[in-house]
Image 1: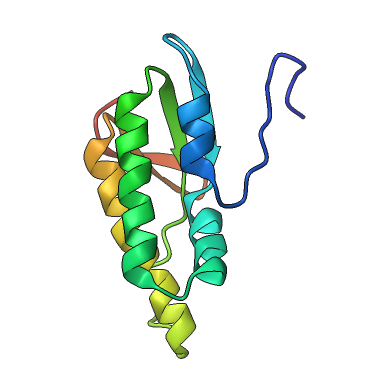
Image 2: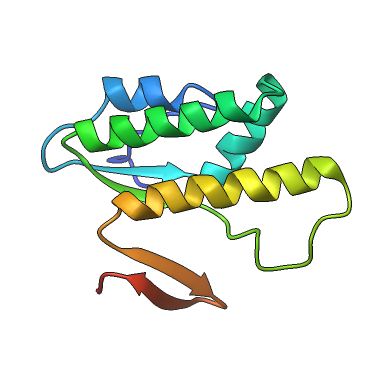
Length: 123
């Protein structure tokens, strides 16, 4: 339902390269979503340190890009501990990635039942 003025890039894994190739001063880039990207990285590499290195590459690319970013992610660590090892890895990697990205952000909003809860910054 995005209008014609939206430019959409569908990239399941190579987000860092797409960010480095895109953006300009005053532009806004919507990155949707970090947890889907992480699950794609987990399927590509069974190597958590390599995945977190890619998260570090992402945070560096975000800092170097002159655009503003709206980044969507899911909070997966507030429920029960997953029974299977893959679910636990996903939860842990998501939490670590969300922390690194939130550390850089001016504003962090947790949406609960459609209600924004400002964790960092303000409207």
